[in-house]
Length: 247
Image 1 (cartoon, rainbow, N blue to C red):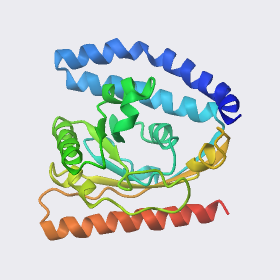
Image 2: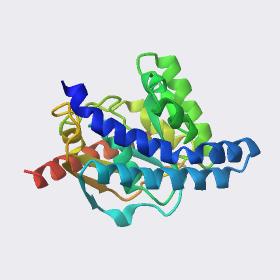
Image 3: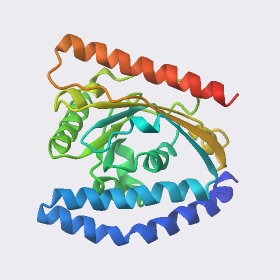
């Protein structure tokens, strides 16, 4: 029954994807020609229009806190908690100044449409259950970052489907510290109400808090551990703060 109730939402998403498919060949051409700046520009244009459109269609009441902390340009690593599949379009609606892809679970590679678009926007698929492959995925992400592309990663590794933040994978921070780029911590709350709470796409209030970027260039191993703990605490405290706003 829930599948039937989600059909209208699926049709809307499919229609949006068809509309943005015009970017496919443009992005692919820029990539094949080696024009990284043009590729990033086209990816940004596609995602920063797709995200707000999806939020509008699904009735998302988006509240952004700390918008002034969004960097003007990349590369950076965005680190956020993970409540829902809806986190992806929400982040595209919030971060509209520079291109970024996602570090996403491997099974999404087989998902209709998403499996094609995620690699196109310079995302990386990761298999959390295979440490060797997970490390390889992080290394691929690091190479993207060195080439000027930004990435978003959810250190929990899986959806919490609620306001509780799960344990963070310690290796996630190396995505930023190895290439020495800033980390932008982000806390979000409410996306689980858009789908996971009832299993049906529903309007919901979503709050997103962006913290000031944390530099990682030239840090020591000890400082890396401290920054990882600091980022995790910021996100945990941020989620609790945002959840209180919705009570």
